Length: 188
Length: 188
DNA sequence: AAAAACTTTTGTCATTTGGCAAATAGTGAT
DNA sequence: ATCACTATTTGCCAAATGACAAAAGTTTTT
Image 1 (tube, helix red, strand yellow):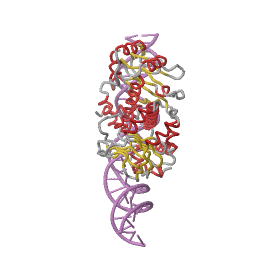
Image 2 (cartoon, each protein chain N blue to C red):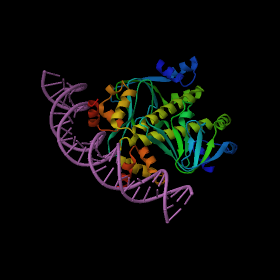
Image 3 (cartoon, each protein chain N blue to C red):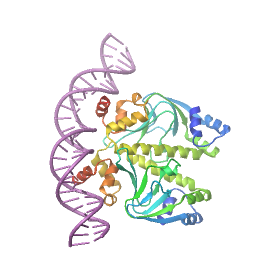
Image 4 (cartoon, chains in turn brown, orange, cyan, yellow):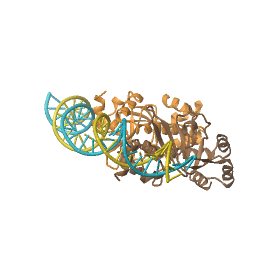
């Protein structure tokens, strides 16, 4: 729980009373490897802070291949942005790559916090914006790099992720086949 | 100017008095093809609404190649997100791809509007978030597609952009060389 | 109009990556 | 330990893309 509070405090000030309120609004939720945080048909739990574990956001492309859009790891928020923005039900789903411990804010809790804590919306906006900017900045250069460089950069940015993620997930994130990724690994 | 107001109204309500205030805070600015909207050294004009023309956001990668991160065209906001977020001076710059007419909000004007119009921050946040989500959703699938598909999708999404953009800019956006793009064009 | 500067196309060949299928390794259940 | 299941590696060849250089086409300047 402390990680969550510290994370929030990076984006705005909160007094002790507000912190206590936030703690009361959070539900701890466990996910086993392979289980879904959000999927078509279930009511989406809108926002989760990952205390432990790795999630991935993925979808099926027009060729029917399963694509991993990105990974989210410890001490970050995972938001189903599409449902967050009240859009049409997303074709994306969020799956646990490893066993996870999540701190989940239900929709009503978010509304309560938004109504009670004056800084709340500002903090959430900053977090959302930073997360999105980071994603754009990560994705954009990848297009201009070859597969080996993309893999090496991934290793550098997430040194402790690569060995906890199945090869196929990582390959689809990097935009290559798993055989290619396997060969790239060998050549290093 | 009407395009700007209509755009803002998509994201929140504004009364006539507020609309007039916004109009007074905007400066019309012309850029010739090739000129820079923001570059290292100059004070960044933080936000521009493109009334006419195309901008591109670009940078030099570690190999020294100039990469076009994305294009921004008519009736969209161009924000130097990095300076917007008070980060260290960005290595990115924003350049006019064609002659442009921009509606520019100076930093102080933005602050004034934020202080005066209660809905302002909310509107700007929604615009920012939507722009970023769109970019992620556009970039992400590109990694899994081959160059021809990326080009065809670009044509589909921006039918009237491709013929106004130099081949080299578009190639670097698509993550391929200009000779490859030239060949892809021929093959269609 | 000619020259200069820049952009796009094309040629040739090397390298990267994909597709498919089989072999190997790893994991979990009984 | 064995079996079934899944994940990873490898082999082979085809297709896509890059690198480099030259040619052709455009635009701008003089």
